Length: 200
DNA sequence: CAAGTGATTAGC
DNA sequence: CTAATCACTTGC
Image (cartoon, rainbow, N blue to C red):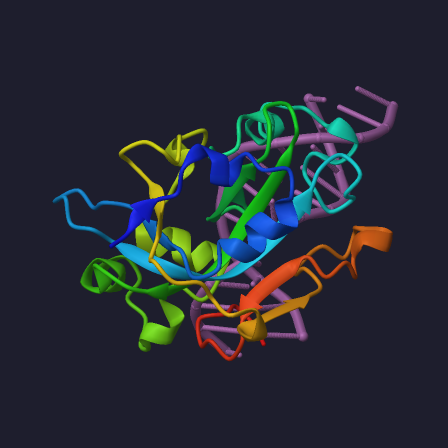
């Protein structure tokens, strides 16, 4: 049995807890033929609001792009980066509180043949082991920005069992060298030894 | 290890 | 308006 995560899951105040609990959940994006294309979340990063120098919403920066981060928990925040990639985030918490969790790695679950068409890589290991890669594999682009994760286009499911705490590792976030004293905060979480984590 | 790609942002 | 930067990936 797999139930959709409800609004209460996303609107909690504890973003680090949400980031940890998203591990093991299933991200689903139906393909154009209706097929389920999905993966189990194996790596996340928490972005902790106006204080967090690594966050797009640092100092309450509110622009056309970052506006999505101020939406109600359970909204998708998708942005374009480095001229060619998209990144998928889950907005967390109350409206006007810009917390979010970046999904950085997925273990392919359903619709793997769709992923292989979108990403013709040699090894399946390369399919979804990174934030840009998984967006390509699931077909997530800028049109998914502001999409409600309780809607029909993209959602996250509980698979019915928890990832054991002993199998969760925390460490520094990736690619945020500019974040001064926030560089080393252990706000990245991943499933121990999972091959679809973006880096060891 | 460096190139590539273009939206976004700050600063003038 | 201009220019630097970027929550990355790939191929050398």
